[in-house]
Image (tube, rainbow, N blue to C red):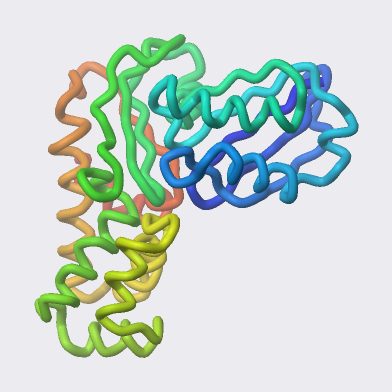
Length: 254
C-alpha cells in the first residue's frame, strides 16, 4: 500500500492506494516548510489525518508539496513524515506533481496558478528548467497572493476606487494596521493575500479590478513563461487561480 500526498499552502490531499486502486482520500490543512517548522508539520499531520492512515502502515509515502524547492526544505518535511509513519518517504515539489499530471510522458511547460505561482520546462520525466517563483514578496506573479498584494498596496496608498476600498473594509472588518499585521507578523500571510483576491472576484466586471487582474497575469507570462522556449512547447496550467481566471488567461496567452 502507498500513501500519496499533494499539498499547497491551503490544503493537503492524502490518498491511500493499493494495486492502483484508491482505498481512501482525506483532505487536511496545507503545509509549507517556508512557514512551518518540522514539529509544526508533524503536529498538523498527526492531528489532521484519521488513525486508519497510520494503522494501515503504508510501505512508501510520496509527498509533493509547496515550498519543497531545496534539499533543506525537503528534509524538513521528510523528517516530519518519517516521525509519523516510520516508513520510507520521498519528498518532491508540487511543481513536479503538476508537470506529471499535465503532461505525463510528454514535454511541455507546466504552470501553477493558485495562492502562489510556479512554472517549469518538463521533458516528460524530470524538470529541466525552472524560473524561480520567488514567493509572495518577490514573485508569485499571476497568483491570488500577488493580486491581493497589489490591491492592498493600492488600498493603503488610497489608489483603489473609494467604493471598492469601502466595501473591502466593510467585508473584512479590519484596519490599515490589521492589514500590515496580517502580512508581516501572522503565519501564512500568503493565505491572507489570496483571500483578498477572492473578494476581488466579485468585482471582475469593474475596469479597475479587471485591469489589475490582466496585468497580474501578463506579468506571469512576461517574467516566467517567456523565459522558456515557449513557442516550441505546449503550455498547460493547474491551480485554483488558473481555473477561476481561465477565460482571461486564454485571451492573454493568445
